[in-house]
Length: 237
Image (cartoon, rainbow, N blue to C red; front, side):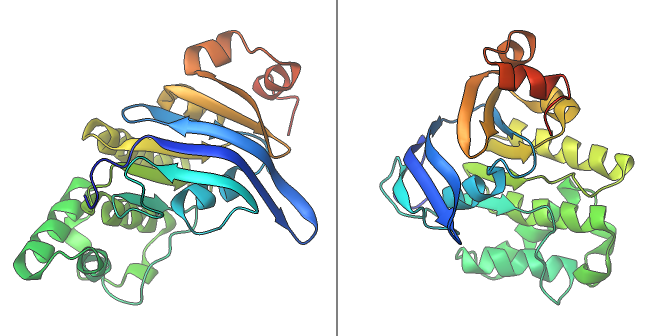
């Protein structure tokens, strides 16, 4: 990991505007090591934009994103999207390409890519074209690629949203395994059942602002605000 430990990640006063619309309104948050943080909120709450700002894909209009090691976009972090971005090459080559960009050379690159595929149960299809796979398989490739990089923190943007129940359960199991291996998870979803199963802590957004930040058990059993209560009860969409 270049530059030492990268966590915690601190967001101070993050604001983002696009096309005359305010998407995020003064977000303050800290993501420390260890826990699984779920960012909850209805569609349009700003969850995906916030994740992209954390990952460094979007520059905020105002505010600061500060990593513990002082880098603007450290290598020891990764992101997977709702619709995986895969190259026009084999499953194994997609993972090897990411490892190559991270400076892993030759034999070690192939070995790490093969090991990552094995961890997500896709060893048998390593030579197949990644873009002809099912949605669930493509998401598993994306997670294998991220996991192969051994990130300190992994950002996941609605990774199960477009999948059938069986594929979604596979992805959930992989996310749990990545976390158990030592990676901090920050994931967006509007799926309350998924959040209840996976979250250690909750960041609840509404209309681009943080409404509540709490331990998962406290958030679900004793929401502090009417907006959070309405969301949990299915009255806010």
